[in-house]
Image: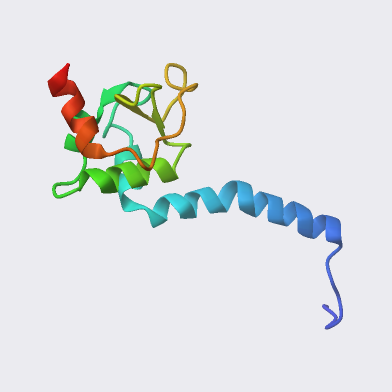
Length: 119
């Protein structure tokens, strides 16, 4: 049986903590952000494909505000990336977009939306 004063060895606790952080936290984090979860679903947005902001916004649920999309993407570097000039975004980067930086949370989405029109 178990003793009331029994404790697990420190090494065992460290391994358990590491496993928790690697496996459980990322899943819980995605669940906390329904927009990230929605866009990351297979078939929703082509993976590892550069997309203009307007096209990515069009794939969001109706009523999604541009700034909400930018904030969501900025929080999840593992799922979203932004190219150097800020004109294209990538969902689930693998080969083509893997070296892109994180999404800038201060990027004004109205400027991003206007960029394709001005070009």
